[in-house]
Length: 626
Image 1: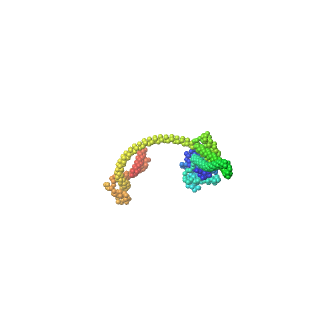
Image 2: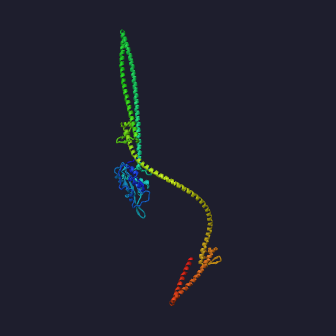
Image 3: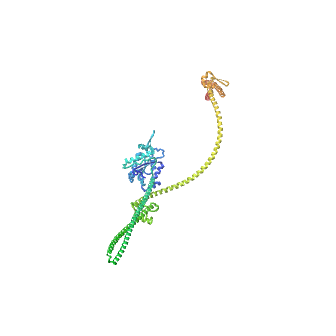
């Protein structure tokens, strides 16, 4: 059923496309796909200002702009103008206004391609391919970018709609209605009925044609139903005429019975008159035989004879009237019979015509029912002799109208049937290819199933091995946990020893630098009372503990080393002083020394320097070791 605003309302719908969808749209525009070929009704090229190479146009359109990663890169906008308010034979007018409207909504740099198909049944739809550009500003820079929602959000806000796809569509529809009313000045234009729920309600041309085909089938069914109703009414009228004829026959029979009764009365009168005549003749004979003395009786007989003559004359008049009534009744009966025969013949012709239309409604009968400007036509050579006679007979206006409606519906059904057959052929080819792919997939699935079974067997084997290994690991884990517990106990003891070692190591390092703080007697270390404050409570607490043997040995060894180093230092200082004195002496004695003595003095000085350098290196290493 068509909407109430069909023909006086336009539509603007959006379909988001990715690059694959744009490629399919390019093939459709160039009529390289089955859908485009099926829709084409003539060879008229599309009207376009940009060309049909959509992918190349898109690449050129987005050059220098930031393109976000999104599911859709392009919007396919379908602009449909009201079929009753805009001339479908003026494509330039529609293409111009579609572009102006889109540029007002999406900006002057939004449209990358346009097209108006002129080879389809619908002449009021413009296809626009839009990738809107805008300046994307950040804290650091501003740059051109592509967005399919930036302008739609602003449009939805302008019309008080939610910034969601459903709101975008409502706002765009309202904006297009305002444009047609205010800019195109279309009188009587209406806004399409708003959708009650969200979702895509756009129907393709194929879907619309299928719905039209269903409508034509419904019209055909309705026409056949009306024909059946006309047939029933004709049968009812024939039955009514037969009933009236029966009533008239009954009346005629009544009149015939009445005429018969009158004839019987006349016959009775004639018999009575004949008897009276016989009696009169006898009376006259008796009067002639007894003429004398019978004059009074003769006179009476004469009077009765005159009365009988009058009765005979009246009976003859009645008989003539009865004959006239009988003739009139016979004429009426003949007229009724003729009318009944005409009604029967006409009813049979109408029934035969209805049967012929019903047979022609099936293209399988081969009658090729087609519409003419005022009626319809059929192939006579495909008719039976009786059907040709019925076809050439007069047709009532109601049957002519119904037949033409059926013919128009059949022609449309044939056209769409041809297209559907073409589509079915394409579908069959696709189904065959799909079946081949399914067979290949089935073989691949079987191979994968075998591989999967082998894999499962291997997994089962590995599962058993893992179970055995898990059991072994459990046993080892128990042993490891026992070992860990023992190790933990050892670790606790080691931690205590480590803490003790750390305390005594710190104490040894401190006491080495201050040997005068302590007094070591045997295995006991006593802290001098005067040095307790300088040593600190931590060192004092450590020294109150019995020292471990290693700490005592290290302390004694380091104290001994420190004492030796002190004595070595004293010797080094004395040696350095002697070296300086020797150097000064050699310097003063230089002028009086012989060359050989000077050579010996130089070697002595070098030896002194080497000894000094070695001593310094040893001291540095010693200090580093401390």
